[in-house]
Amino acid sequence: MARTTIHLMRHGEVHNPEGVLYGRLPGYHLSGLGNQMAARVADVLAASGHDIAAVITSPLERARESGAPTAEVFNLEASTDARLIEADNHFEGIPLNRNRWLLAHPGHWSYYRNPLRPSWGEPYTELVARMRDAVASAIRQAEGREALLVSHQLPVWALRLWLEGRWLAHDPRRRQCSLASLTSLTFEGRTLVGLAYWEPAGDLLRSAEDMVPGTSAATVTMGRAGALKEEPPPAPVAQAAAPAGPASPAEQASPAGRADEPGPDSQAGLQAGAGRAETPA
Image (cartoon, rainbow, N blue to C red):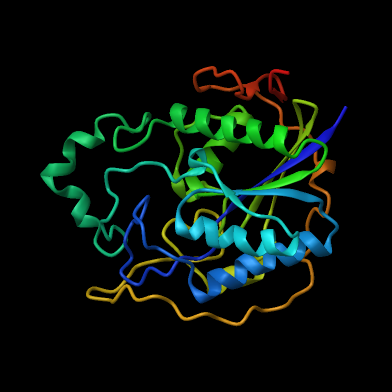
């Protein structure tokens, strides 16, 4: 039975001097440090003997730029999959971290009625459904090898919660999904047998800013009023040895639990069970 590993990568640091919750807005590119993070991931995957057969990214600029170095290192042409896109969010375009009082505006009140869904954005169940479909498609494309899927923090974290049988509603401060991190899913055939989280660019996080750092070492992006959203200059890529971590995510133990809020069934969707997840043959 073929063993396939799907690495879910979150994009690198974004150039966001105004501290805007950018969501699906176009025009948000990697910063110089973000480009270094993306290059580091590519270098670590190559140096530690991973067999990347496909690079598939969210259509947003920051995700495409994050996957480009790995595609280049493995001599691949990256493709995009809209199912990997950032979650929809009513507060997109607002500099939330700089001024939390903006959330108290009466125009937003109706969006707070159901934080478990959540009512201010894409339902968690729909988010999980499209992410598991994207993973199932990648398994078929890279069967017996590995694929890098570049997405965003909430989509990756929601899928992990579902696979581990945890509630989808959660505290964003507890998300374990740092900039340029990898959440690696290993399958035997269509059965999930391993889940590993690692940070190939972990040493760069202390210098990074993140809208939602979660459990990472990055600091919160506050933004500056009136800051120009100018294109970041290219930065030199730092070279470094592979960090300590799972060189072979396939060796990690299988997650156990149940899906408290599984998404709607789909023909190619992952199906959660007691400590496993499968895709239909």
